[in-house]
Image 1: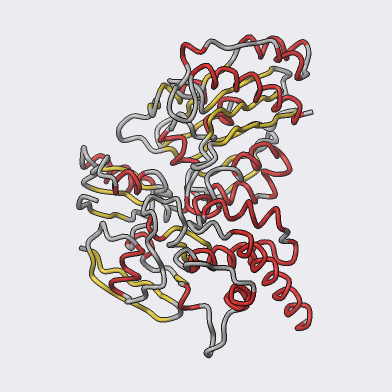
Image 2: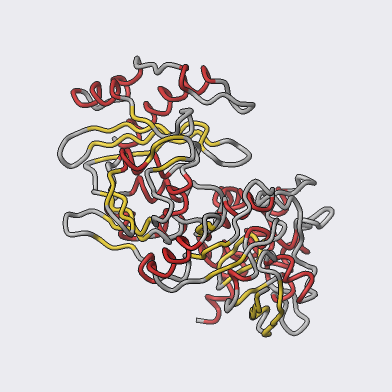
Length: 267
Length: 162
């Protein structure tokens, strides 16, 4: 790892000020991606700004409309174990409980995961699948607008995710085919029927540009919420990731398989 | 450079280290506690698992500076007054190790999962909870047996104390 300077701000404003001071500074949330990346010398931030000690980024609260607001520095283990999340959005709690391994879940955070936007991460599927809202120190963004491509988000260079708000769906489930070594998603499908009756199907782990929705599956499920409704819907392999773990064709097929499983699990 | 103070196994340890120093390096090189191992060094194998503020984490994937002010427990902190911790005793009894390299991380992961699940810990849960710990000798079977026995023994002790 190259040399760096560690900072531990107490407020979001202090973190933003530190971030603005240097072009080469990086925010350090749980560090479960950033630190391995720095160790491999694939990242060499001049400064790392630790967000784990900012009280405003912590906590899980039930919102007025029956949804859940999760602070950006809340860990995967906290989401998985939260009574509030398990009661209102059990699919989200179980998704968080399947990220990485127990030790990673004790450190990794929702804000860090979505700001990194790894195409094989799980949370982008939940955010897009549930039509969540991302709050930053500057504005609010819909999940659809937040994720813009491979490791790319709409975040400005000095913008910090502060929370994510999820509406409670009528029903939802996440079906993931994990890479057996890394536990990253080879393909994960989050299928949800929202409280207003609209249907969303979000796919993570498979697409070259990260998370995406499958309009044809959403339409099919709107009129008939059953695994059979998506069984015949195939996605094109043209935009799929292809690597040693699975070809584009394999992942395209997994999208349909995982969509069926997600719909069946949601009941 | 950063002055880092970490309470390790109940004892305060201070050192001035580079900001990029990993927690596992601090433990091994500054605190002299070499029971915490570096296996893969890529956050996968779990040989470096320690408890930070009561939670199992990978010490190779955390800066020492991040742990400044925290309480850390390592494998050296489990045995009390010369008596093995119940999880250590169970690994001994059930031969939960072959070469022993992964053992410190396995035991720290095991104590963490027993803390969270208690007597409810079953074999399937143990195997799932060991996702982040790799045994290169592939001796998982006895490791799982040892963890189950320790969970049962610790639940029994807890019941007897009530």
